[in-house]
Length: 601
Image 1 (cartoon, rainbow, N blue to C red):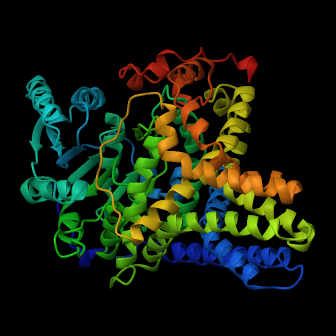
Image 2 (cartoon, rainbow, N blue to C red):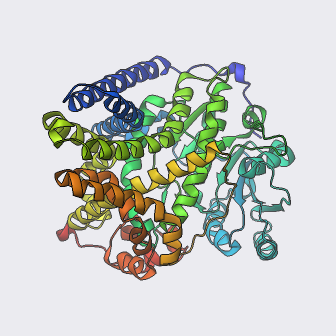
């Protein structure tokens, strides 16, 4: 076991003052940008003076701004680091550059796979290459895989127990495997891991956390563990997560955009957040002693009949770890881990609403003693991520009504300020993806990895249209759900359908008719009163109006298969086809079009 360092021995590193300066710079840039954009918005709404509608619109717009402004400056900072630093990873996490990769692994590490009503064959498919790599590296005895099941479906539980019994026998004497299924799922995933900590946590130094859709290579696990070994101040080390190649059209385009957005955003945020980094709940390494001692989550007060537990546990655990004196950092390297994303819009919304409910629980922790200022900022931003949704919908509804009852558009909004404001909003909205796209287009090897210049530009345009449609659909879904929360509506930890499947019209209609009604009503009202404003309203209204066909078309299995073959939403893994992913026999990789010749770049 590793020698443990008590919290009181943990001192600020030499870069502490440097990090403070970075945070002050970010805060100044953030505040100036917020103020400047709000002044521009006020000027745009100035015709005819300010009334209660204008004040309300400005207030709603102010609620939407923090996420866009933070994303913009994270993207700008990340872009500058990627373009100017000799080693961008070392620039934001110097400890990573000191790891050669041949250091002996001395720590005892538990690998925690948390599952609930999943197909066990899929989990085993993702685990086999990682365990094989650990065994080949001669480190198998330093790891113990724990399959922590919260499965409630009796049939799946039977298959799960049989599959993992055979799996355990197959790996006997190479990597230890422990399977445990809870019959009472107290605390959901966080409670599942807490129960592991109480039973087995004292046996291990670190824990690698995996979700049911996670995939990590042995090299990635060993790299993260070696960094943790080298830095006793590290409490949580989060690896960057990207999407596994998929044959779902919905997931393919989403993951292409996710890959672009995460590159610049994560590097930029890591530059100034430093030791107050994020924890996303999986594909990360925890230092177990402080995690057990300081990161237990409280039970939220219920209605007197049952306890309520925290759903979005990860960021709370991160801020508690940092409050205890340990660093929480992210390693923004793209080959450290993958995840499967929902194959349809409806499945995506189900997962998103669980996050929405979880993030709304964060307000209880804002006044928690001992939290770092950056930690409080992170909690506030996590809340605003979803509070901003009804603000966007409020802008759509109130803005449409105000414009419809104006004599002319010019009497409602000034074009000379309104157009620059629209450009500012769009640039901030898409800035993480714009920054990564510019970097990719400037690097021949990255252009080839994404399928060549032409295919990359086509995919970028497709993803931009996709995002303009998707985001308002999600915003209205959040608005409906948050309204329900006010009246006691809640969701639990529900299972996820991960395989490609079609979405029939009746199901799409049942789930998305309110979205369609909102979008069509807004566009219809403008068509009758102010048709010239329709092109601008499309940014907020087109997605809801087209929600039903959008959900159906992006779920078509045939469309997804064709997209994989011709390269729509192409990821670098489909061009380079790394051996670790070939071992998973992913249809998206097997059916991908051949890599382009250098001359096509």
